[in-house]
Image 1 (cartoon, one colour):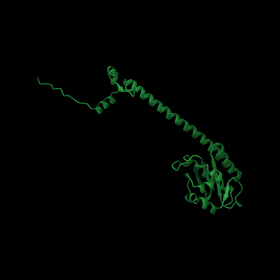
Image 2 (tube, rainbow, N blue to C red):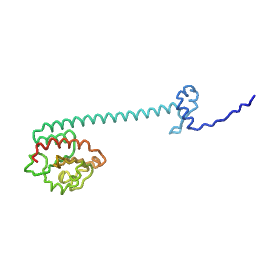
Image 3 (spheres, rainbow, N blue to C red):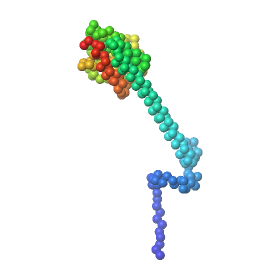
Image 4 (tube, rainbow, N blue to C red):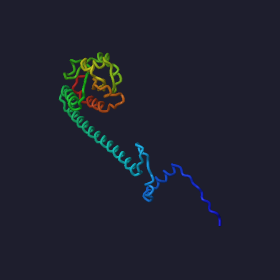
Length: 230
């Protein structure tokens, strides 16, 4: 009879972990082992594997609840944003003249979107552009103060110089403004600029998206020019 030699096999941590992962019923079939297993607790005491698993599951559950709550909050905010935007667009479409359109924009920004500072500027000859709450300045004057904004023809978010803030929002408001978002209004050529501001220096950041403001600008680009004399 041949001798049967037992071969000692050494298992490393990864092999044990792989085996337990592939055999999730292992501790059900070998329940007695659970009494011998323990994981160190922060306090230094030992807790059973089941207690540790329950603790981990509870933490994951809390994390998932927080994530779900955040998603629901974002959904509610997006619903409000959509409703406010829809009402503004309809009001702009129904405007009978330039004054109605400008008033609709200011009312929406001030009372629904709760924007702290709003500036709407038209470029051209004040004697030829119908009266409204918007400022009318010559293109030359605008280039002297906000030439870089007009030059790029794209939305901007971030901080501005004192001269730019004063030109857009006036002396009184300029000192209280921390950050700005603005977008040019274009109908063939640049005919105006829409700017909004907040006292918080990080409220409008260069890294944030400008989708909303750009969308409103696109609506203004199509609804205001028919009421203006170009």
